[in-house]
Amino acid sequence: MLLGGFDIVVIVLVIFVIMVLFAGIKTVPQGYRYTIERFGRYTRTLEPGLNLITPFIERVGARMNVMEQVLNVPTQEVITKDNASVAADAVSFYQVLNAAQAAYQVSNLENAILNLTMTNIRSVMGSMDLDELLSNRDAINDRLLRVVDEAVHPWGIKVTRVEIKDIQPPRDLVDAMARQMKAEREKRAQVLEAEGSRNAQILRAEGAKQSAILQAEGQREAAFRNAEARERLAEAEAKATKMVSEAIAAGDVQAINYFVAQKYTEALTSIGSAPNSKIVMMPMEASSILSSLGGIGAIAREVFGDAGNPPPPPPSRPRPAPVRSTPPINPPNPNPFNPDPER
Image (cartoon, rainbow, N blue to C red):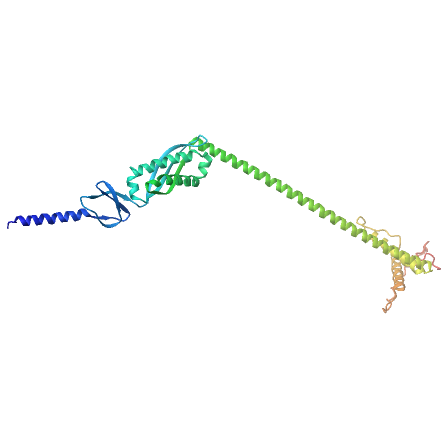
């Protein structure tokens, strides 16, 4: 079957319409923006989704990625304020906010951001000392972010973060810093040890002082109490002596006997309790001692009274000694408190 001229024209028109439709329909994926140019001039920006343009008159100029992107900053040498050479690298995060400005305000956007970031790294780090550079990375990041973001603002770019990844001082400088840190720590340890020793000595001195004060107070209190006890004992002895003296002055012979018996008993106790005495030689007989004790008991009963108690039974008399052919020259006195038997 042969096609006529009219059929060919229709087929050509259909093909042409299909081509026009394909040329005028543009699909923009999410995260991208397309710029439209009409005869080479920017007219508008296509949003994500299905869009229509005028075929053969308008065309897509630039396809801009508006998602946040990462830009690695290579390692570079930086001279610090105190003339120390360090190697530093960084990473930068940026996002396209205005696709038209990013497409038409700057050429080669990534290269421009990279060189701008490297330049500001040298500028910011070069204005700081080495110690400050190594210890204040957060401050460096903040300054870099502020400076770079302000510089790329006319391009429709937003720099979200600039982070210094690594700072590498020279090896000899690292060794010197390690020695310095070790010396500082040793110095600090010695200072702390000296302070601890001083505090310990102060505490020991304070303790000795308090101990001496308490000991002196205790000795003073003990001396005061001993003096008071001696004073009361002296008063008691003086009172007893006064009473005995008054009894003697009144003609009471039993008071003299009681006083002598008390002293006699105390003397016997002292002789018997001596630590260096093993055998005590006494110039008296056992019967004389018993008679003395009996006389002391009688004197006590007379002085203090019986107080309703029955009198004790009379002491048993010792057996008479066998008759000797020669009588003793000095017979023993049965009552040592009365030297004269007739009295």
